[in-house]
Image 1 (cartoon, rainbow, N blue to C red):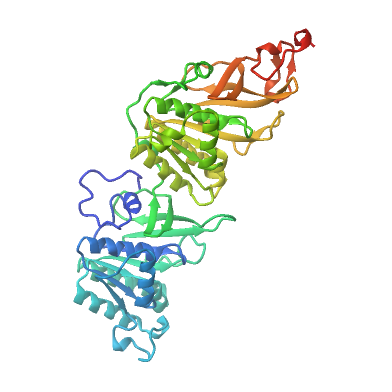
Image 2 (cartoon, rainbow, N blue to C red; image 1 turned 90 degrees about the vertical axis):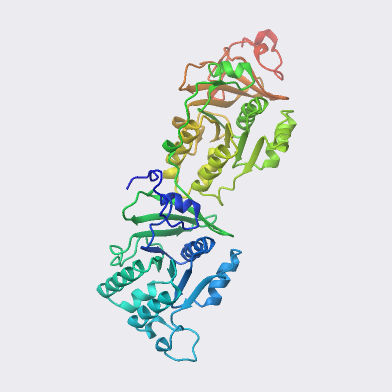
Length: 513
């Protein structure tokens, strides 16, 4: 199946699930009058999804029905109340109690599925549906019916019988079934060929942080949908689905505007500035000035009247503001005015899909024109599997490029000085431009240097310049022509210290030693 949405006018007959992200994945919703299997292990969100499906029907004035063999009405209403929902208007039918012929003993409140005959269950379902005439039906857990059938052939025939019955009465039905914990698919797929679609919910528990939940449309007959895994979160208010980002669907008209950093020397280092829609990666050890460099580009954008969004992984919003105010950059006035947004991202609590959703919302709803991601090291820590970092990041940067949004990224490198600095992962090839920031030792002090190492959209300087951080921001000095080995952190010097920035005193004899 393709991942493109259906053509215009194709959504009129769809049945919305009540979950915007899931409807997007499905191309607008479910086809009506069909059977669908919702599968997943315990706690994956199956019941929550099914409740949202019925609540969406209730909002549209439809009759809805919840059928169960094992869950009491009180249990279901307790689940609903945890999300702030009431189930008034939704019919709840415990099939084990709905008919005297299904009762093994009238004094029990509910029964094991083994005490109930499969034919009696089927008859009870049909009786309730004929009486209520619902347009939406949920059977949770339908795994009980599979247990009652005992063999795959009988189970398949039962599902076939229910499919024909429901289709003849205009019902769209979700059959909720359990998966073994950790399994990607059911070990009994005898009913998959009978139903219209299969939607799978999965969850995993990382060594640290909250559960990672995902959803996958395993099968959807006759319609286009977005396949693959999509991140999911369960919050108060229900299931939220974050469709996998496909950058090619968000293409804006190309612009070749060159953006200034507000510091002429920095613009010269980058060959005149950065092109709108490109990305700049600032690499260097901790404290060398990467975040301040990103703040300088943001400040220039804010002064032009553009909107800026900061996504902070490593430091708190308070620390970021305090540092910028200490340098006299004046970013906080734009934050108070709403032109700049600071979003602190806890990598233990966010998935890549959720983060991409945050960025998209900033760009599409808030019309943000510059995005700062500080830093990629924190982004990496939020990934459930490091192998997918480059793919997620590539798609996100391509999306931002297509939306003509300038992106500034920072990446921490391990160590302080020396020639063995390295990052946790090499992502420099993904950025359109890159600058390298380094500490180096000179005249008994620790200095900073900056050099441009890459710019796809045009030429750049190949010189290494001194970087100084002092109010009101960053200052780019003269080329370090008298040094060799600056990037190693321990250069040799054959020039004059007079060309260095403040804080370095002239050596006797001109420093020719």
